[in-house]
Image 1 (tube, one colour):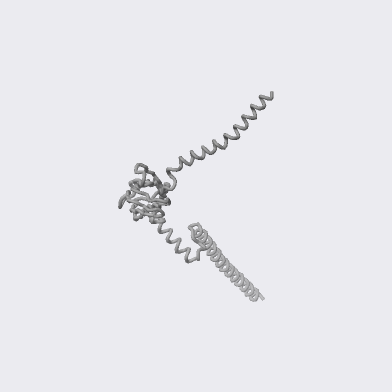
Image 2: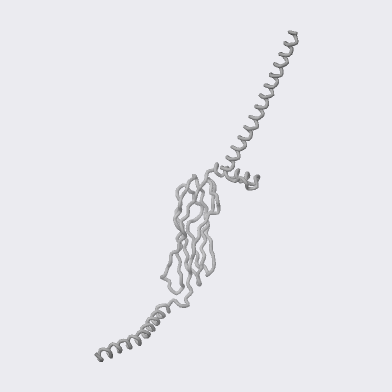
Length: 229
């Protein structure tokens, strides 16, 4: 029995001593794995795509802006930007591709081209693809970064005209009325007010005619009474 207790105690002591040694070995292995990348400058590219026009209109040219920002600590090498083909309803002017030999850290570059929508509607454009070399020391390593897809709503010329008219109306009313619904409600109110005013005038006119007829009838009765005396 005593031998069993001594054996168990020896196992506990061995486990207590071995655990810190194993933990230290694990830390050393982690440090060895991270060592090749410690202190290495690398590029991290972020891509943004926007339209130069906030209100795209059919038949009017608009600029597509692709911005690439290097948020990393090293330069991005051999950067290639490639946007996707637009639908056939858009006439392209310029190139969907661009190349940069290097984008330094904390620097933004821009690529632009133009498209002209020939019809109104809504389309969703796929993400921009950006390929680059993140570290100079590893020529074979290439990373792909992309922007999120975005939706383009192309408006008709009539919609643009209505937007401009509403804008002028908003200025004239000091921002009180800035929507089509607001103007419709104002028109209903004006029509109701005019109708009430016209109705009141008609009522007063009819009432005046009725009073004149009553006076004339009363005068006629008096005249007849005087003649009969």
